[in-house]
Image (cartoon, rainbow, N blue to C red):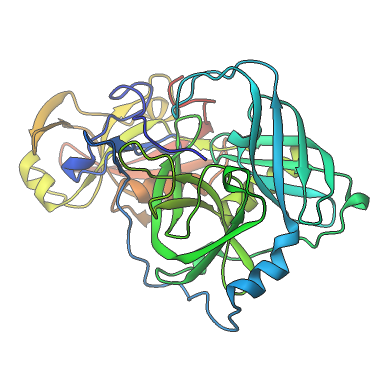
Length: 398
């Protein structure tokens, strides 16, 4: 379970934007996108702000009790143990390790013996074993892992599995306040169940390679080290997320009631690509940008009051090749630097853009090699450019 206690990168390094959450400018990256996580002096963690969802349908209906959800889904949740022979490299989440054993959680998703877990649970593993609720331990193969979504797919002999696969739900239908159940193996305590609610939607957390995972679910169901890769489940017994990270305060390493789960829509898409071909493709634009609002527009003297103000363009990236421009002047806004004079993205493929979140979502909906039309305001005049999207680099810092 990642604690998210280290801020990522240097300002604008290879399309990584330095922390400016305190400016309320929501600086982000599209590679397909990165929003940094900042740490305060007291050791607490600040995560990019959530946005209220009003159009989704609540995950309600024929609700079960926590005990019923556990009874139905618990057998399909696995304890995962990975043997690490070589020292792990340093990651955005901490210093290099010295090998040994990593543990986490996962869950069965089909009758072919496929399990979902977090990529960081099996990172660098030479051997992996999974133990289901019936106590049977099986050898597992890592079919593939995607650091951009922190999702990995394992495979075991399906004929040796007696557990029933968990049903995958619809994370886009979840609403704040919906009940949630987490099943996993915190601190090695196998088949532990906790419950709570969905505390917020559309959070953003950092992936192991430094890019951003968007539309993340926040929950107060207790999740701790060892819960990584386990399911977050609604009260119909359907998986709505993959528990991945926690925020901690001070010297604490445990739950403070702020946990984050990769939405199952994101995990499902990654898993399908891994099962089909072993890897996951992510479209790449190659810009850093800031949310433009009326206050920022007034400060910078811009006529347009909504969009994404380009702060940086990655050299030799798709955006630069298409002619998108960042500003060459620096202004101070609320005590922080903002690059002025760059293009303001107002639409992608004809859909209005109000923020960097919208840019990230638009790019994430495409595959590498596809073309998008981007409407910008440049020097007060509208322009339209066509961008052929590239392949996302393996790391936001590369």
